[in-house]
Length: 134
Image 1 (cartoon, rainbow, N blue to C red):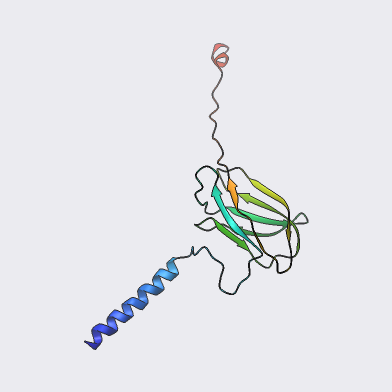
Image 2 (tube, helix red, strand yellow):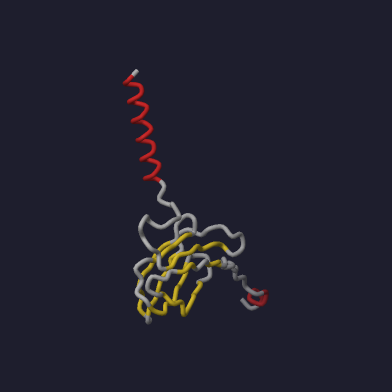
């Protein structure tokens, strides 16, 4: 009986550890850390979260830091120097979004949620006159 309880408890602990290790998308800040700037990125049409959006913080024309959005579309920056930033949001298949003159202050964070518009793919077809003269 004791071996069954031990086996059950060990299995429960192992499953718990595996599920935590596999869940890399918790959507929140690490415990005890202060985020200077955080937010989420979603598709403008369907409001679904966008994963792997490259978010770059630029201070005085110098790239300061780059992060990727998680599976919930969440992103965060911490330990940014105080100053006036430009934030660039980029993902293949979407139009680039640039937010300028965003001020980061000491001990004063803010949330910036972004909607990205999907680029329309355009197929280029030759004009009818192309066939007449060739």
